[in-house]
Length: 79
Image 1 (cartoon, rainbow, N blue to C red):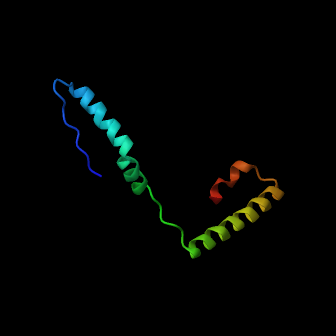
Image 2 (cartoon, rainbow, N blue to C red; image 1 turned 60 degrees about the vertical axis):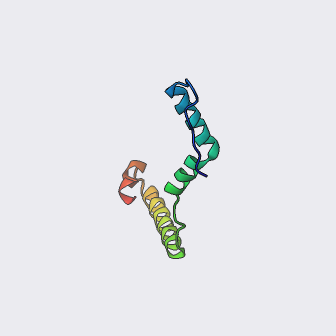
Image 3 (spheres, rainbow, N blue to C red; image 1 turned 120 degrees about the vertical axis):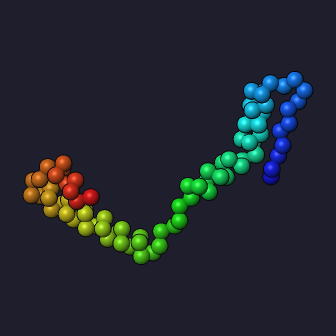
């Protein structure tokens, strides 16, 4: 997929850079590199289960604190 951009005659360097940038965007090289850079691994089954259990525990704790009449800003220590 590599490509060349050569200066044409009396072309200004600014227009050369603009032409190069346009060719890069159209080729999709930069987009592919960004997607590869930020790709995340899928979570394992055990990690999914653990996080689901944690969410359930927190919901129960929030409900308990709410019944006791504690204000919502006091729940921050649970996170």
